[in-house]
Image 1 (cartoon, rainbow, N blue to C red):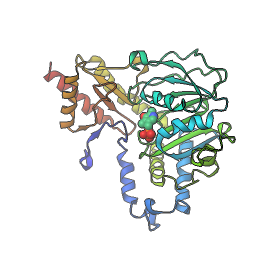
Image 2 (cartoon, helix red, strand yellow):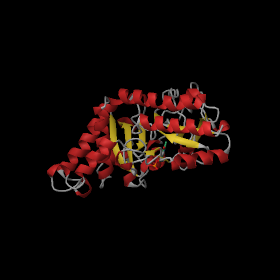
Image 3 (spheres, rainbow, N blue to C red):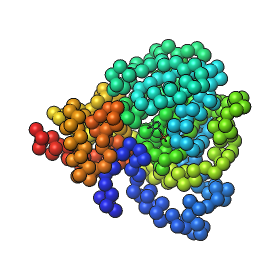
Image 4 (cartoon, helix red, strand yellow):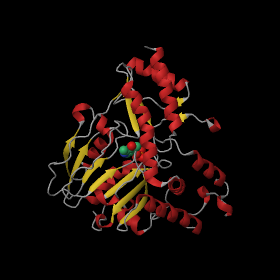
Length: 362
Ligand SMILES: *Cc1c(COP(=O)(O)O)cnc(C)c1O
């Protein structure tokens, strides 16, 4: 591969598009002739204001974000959102959570610090290998919102249909599927994503929140930084933002626009995932762990059914120049994260390698 890079199947921080990395490399010492790089410039400068404004505008265009939604760039990753959401969105003090994997379990646990949090559906009985039926859930009449992790990064499942929230605002963690395909923003009260899976460096969460959900009546002890309205009122610059990460995400947004937007990206992702799933479905050695109808296009866990053999495959892939294929300990086996920036050739090369491994070990 170019620059001696490996095919990196990391779940996050994850591989980035090479043209974006090249552009950033070219600008790192001197951003467009302004005499300093983006890492070194004031966030209050005109140049930086243009960078953040364009990032937001490009994201709005890509996703078709309606005007009554705010776009916020907040530090602390997706994890901090697990606390900010209940701190800001609970008014009745009640929320409904759907737990379909490790990340929604974490969010559910964190929210319990702040109110009456109901578990309205879960797929824990089969180690989160499917999405439960969410068409008629026991939604609490007092629920302030319903929470999902739309793509579970560790367990590899995706909501292909959103739950019926019976009119309550849906809050979705899209960290590991953000911008992987078209998204109808008005179906949600709030969408958020940690940047490092699909769009940029770690440490940044992108929050898209419907204006009427901004809470102007927070517990006065709420830390100022954890108030969405503060971020909204200050253009995500109440304090020094994660300037660098926002800049890089902005580059990725422009790149996605250039390749044809989210429809084009979805097609690429579908074709790419199909290469791997077709192989797994036809393999006598390997099998995917998630029910076919609920499989993720981004995170593909698979196993041989024998943990020693799994470890041997992981070691062999590593030796062959494929990186970060070891599955998370809660699922075992292997996991290929094939985000937007993973080229189809990377998946083809991996499948070819696994096919040869299977033959050699038959
Ligand atoms: C990675 C991930 C997180 C945590 O992100 P951080 O930025 O490390 O806090 C949360 N939710 C999902 C779905 C993730 O994949």
